Length: 478
Image (tube, helix red, strand yellow):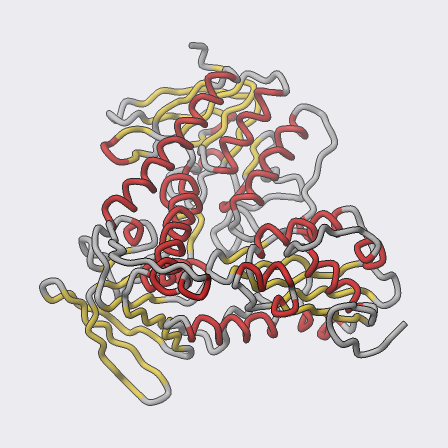
């Protein structure tokens, strides 16, 4: 194996492995450095997303939703279920099997594309050299014409609530429990906290989410966030805003959580505690001082619009750079950088970045919120359509939520789309595509949607934005 490459990618999460594959497709000799150890200390590709993030959490969300429907929702459909049994270890085992299949699939793609997997920890040195420290601490030096840093992120820890065994855990640990906690506390009511809280609530846990902020999901359109708060409350998620955790202590198999709210200081005794207050870029040990790569004031790697650092030929993508920490954002940056290295013109449209919360109902959005448009002084029109008026949603027995589309009154271009309801993550793709192609609301209104489908809600919301929805009362008529 030669020690010189056209491209060395450090990190094999959604940003890194995609970048490596695209580089190889473009004819570049490529290596990827990855140290991840999965269960059984087996090296694995895929990073946080495939191993302990996106994929395993969705596997549990799907499984627990089926269980919850079987226990609570099938009778309305004329289906009576009896003697329903819950096997949490088997559920976790299924999740692990899915992870193993997908990470193994990436390993197969590396082999098919001729990518060298350098198992270990990568550190960028001067003159575009990379030191790879193997799992047995043996160092090896490599050089490259270009380096792509894609080392991702790790959960933010709270010194006041230190992790302990399987009692106080981060988001990764919450995917491994073999039994259902009686009472569960989650610090943080953001995307991760809501998804993990939903998993264990569906299985029977009493779930309390403590959120320091005074607003719920502030990045989401206010109308959608209000609907979500109400819906999650009905599901039994006890979400407490303006509540600051001050500490925790483990006593045997119980955890005492200390917190403050407007009424003063309190204590809560729970069986498990999840710390889900966000993630931070993983740059520790990745950059040597001699590499000369600059960080910004937030500890992220500073890059330009092409994801190139201040050192020519060294790039950074994904969670270690500015922008949302989203797997698909990192993947698209990986493609862009690979293509730019090869001399092609490529870019990422950050204004059309989809966002999803995989609860039930799902919450999904792209573009501007009403609040942002008002603050910017944009002359806009909102169109909404409730799933309660959707024939397909009624047939599914899943009528909560709505679709909202925001249009520019002057240009008729879509400025944003916001959905809470069934299959919101899938429905959002239509809006992302429309915005990417600069479509007008008229374009969507003139697009025939199959009946009966959930996608008709997008069609009706577009019609509503122009005052001519068919299946709901309009504010005006054209």
